[in-house]
Length: 442
Image (cartoon, rainbow, N blue to C red; front, side, top):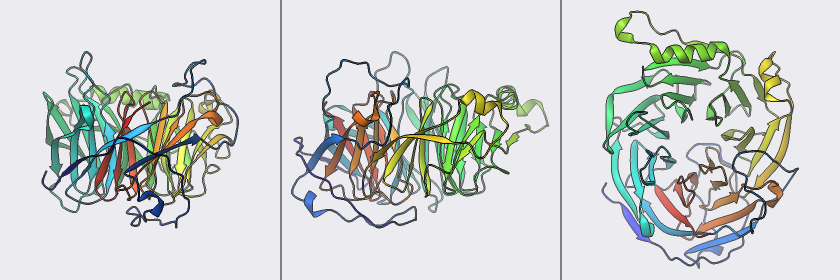
């Protein structure tokens, strides 16, 4: 890839105080970030503090550490950055967690921006190695999201990408050499695709969230559309983010309509159609596969946020969601999921907000946060190039340690962050086409 820059960075962090304040702007491209003068004297800076708290303790979810460990401040060091030559916003970064058994963690990750898909590998001493890059044939395409899966028999990785054209494309690997699969692409959404997610248990099941107000479930083994979530009581505007729970039994979605919705995948109808999708063979029948439409979510709320909800993740049986309000909210339905899924559908269900993870200068939309594989760390960037990291592997969120990562050359909006599988490497991607590597020191 021509015009690419690789630069080593100073290794000693210094302490900095944070500034606040920014104007809201509701467009995906955002505005050119304005750099704080206070950062200009140092190459990289790190500040640590305890996060602000609003409520009670949370217990019993995956990722909590045991008691008795000595608390130490989080610390990351910026070791490298690259600039992709398209010079357009990089909207997504995803590490490949599907490493074959017995193979060393390759720290493989992908970025998408403009009509470009780029695959990198993190190596020792801060090196970020470019493996391959791909450009879509349509120069007007702009990729917004990517997701990794794998072949169950060989363990070879598979990357799905999608964006403004609403077409899902696939990059397959043969002996870890990647190539576009020009024969396999999915068309069905009536607008841009904002997020892709693979099922945590079944590597063939892919979920997409779209501007057309719907979510779609696909089986990439048999190339069929399994289900459509949306309609009568679905989202009323763009669906911006979605996530499977750890067992793949339910999904959560959010969007521009300020709402969050939970959909069960354990109903008889959904389980039946997923099972049938695995055995469908278009070569042996003239009958098209019969997809189902799910018009009613099992749970919906608009009580958490008052603006676009652009990022959501399951956290055990709790939910983490973010809007353009300078905070990530941890919440849960007041009722048990067993009672919710028994029905009937009730649009007036209540929620319990457990905690607000506060940060600053992030009031433009489509700025997505990330969790590490073990759900011990959480990170989000803001529109001035700062990255906020929390240690959420604690029983009481009021004791969650936080760190702010700053570099004087990182001044553009950070669209997404991504952790390596072991949580030792954090990548941030920006509106100016740069990606930044931070290595954990402690």
